[in-house]
Image (cartoon, rainbow over all chains, first blue to last red):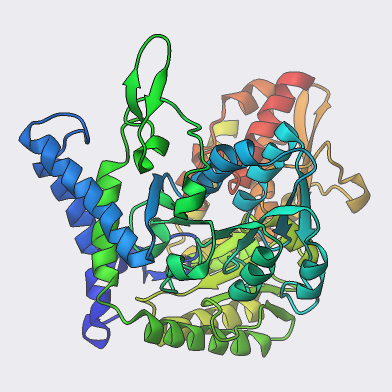
Length: 403
Length: 136
């Protein structure tokens, strides 16, 4: 794809590679996005010029690496309008952290955690584990026929609910949930709110402070940052209710053989040597993203998703999920009645086109949709209409040849 | 012809095809090589766990030789089963246990052999070897 048609593509070295003799078309962005060269360079430069452990030594490298690591936190505070940013390994660890550090100490037997059928396994399993441990009840808001959350049932399910956990934007359907309405209902009933924003942060500018929620979990790698790092945003009041769940270096204030005291800031929840190079990479990714008009890109990508969904619907035997309403992410999940998703994904890969196939770590939602898996094309900043056309004509060709 | 030379021929047959989609098309043709399990024989016991498609496989000991019967809803997965059938059926347990899954890479039909939730071939391969160890 000529770079001069879309200069942003030149920032992503991986887009130059070929797969099976064809130019790579990468449509698995909901799983992870590609990394701009500035992110790769920042991480390489960190290891080449300032690698040292953070928060400990007084030498020059230690000072520089500490500044670089904490610069990411400052950047994230500003980017998300959040006061408390706890680094984790990603969204999954962030939700587990909330379950252990807050849930375990603030919820009791008989309390209810409200989840939805739309959740990723990462926002189901930690709560199931907590439920087994302390006896809290889990309740699920169903997905309605139109693949949106059943808001009437949500409203009717609030009794004894102390925590509401829901996905901002579904990784399978691309559906953006009515976040503000759910938060309003939850707060009216005095429940805390945790939002899984893994799929939201690449597309939406999250303003945590104005959302009136308690926790938000996300990952760097879905927004052009490196894998292995994410964060849990916590409201200042809820932060005070959390107890550390991992002990060790970096999170302590003093340690004696009799006992220890802990840091008061986010470090309290970041035991052990943190992900320093990853934070440096994420910092660079945020700086890179800040130059992009995310709103107009979001509209462009959503239009691509709508076009893809419509073209796919015109292929006999094809079912397309999701509504692609305003605010939804640019994700198209589909299934053909004759060509198995795994066959389709491997055949597309033979033409250099990367799509995700399977249950997308959302088996309860798959059950609701009545399928064992789907194919999923998810678009991001560097994807073009030409790539979409290539994918669609390849799919049409595959269906004709193999069904 | 030795067991190893028939495997070698298979590797050559696949690796000579330059076009990846044509290679997969040939792999799909191998779906017919499978001694197919009927739908009512599909069970939790013979389910290939961790496979993205519905895949089932059983290993039988027929007079001391290995035979597999299998089925999958994805044609490429059943094609992989077909390749395994051609390579393993009627062979000695020692030959089957001497195989490594590397041949699927050499044939150009897979890009990863790491056991994972997306790698049904590796799961099937390991399942067959473990059943051979049990049943022979």
